[in-house]
Length: 316
Image (tube, rainbow, N blue to C red):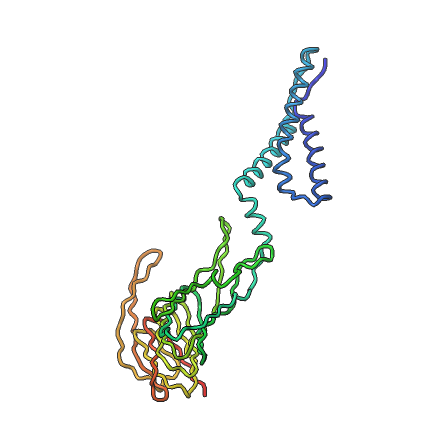
């Protein structure tokens, strides 16, 4: 009487087809992950053929049926892995996994932005968001933005293709509004943060207002002939030539450094700040300061409000 071991043929055929698929993927440079996702239905074909053969033979003789547990488990594991690859492919996660491993983190140049400022523009308002920003001046009438950004590049492709990907400008009346956008992230659950450091060049004769989301702002004016304002920055660095005719007004800042002998303090107030701790909230009292620093005749004001720290460096 013949003994039939259910699962043995399926395991042998599965190993045969899997070996052929993997060999072809190596020779023809096929994607192994997609091969596994498309290969596992062969298991059902082999199992179905084995059952049909068994049914056909059972009509002619009375075979003794035994189950090859190890073979059945092996086939089940391979089938489960194949189904898993198919689910990843159907949901798009397979492409994200490939993109993650193919990506590399690089520092690249920002696409430059250049714009001629009309004579009727009297004020420039800048929202630097959470990006560090350096501001310089030119004697002409051009506004420029350039710098670098660090991000994951997939397939060697740059994250930014034009200045509109990180910058928004709008003209309203006599004011030019400039906003630094958040850099785009890759879609999906495997996202990587991007960083940007930009330099803004503005005409020296145009009034400037900068709003920062608690990030560093560096001011390097040359021959300034207008008024500047900076608010809500964690650190304001001022690099000034000694020949400048400016007056620096620091209002409600926590710390002032540089040029200590020339600062004229007008107010020191205790400000209560509430901090959230893992276990409890606590209140910290910090003395906020207001002071002025005058260079030359102090004709052009630079006002800094609600900053954590102000640092002044004067160059001869």
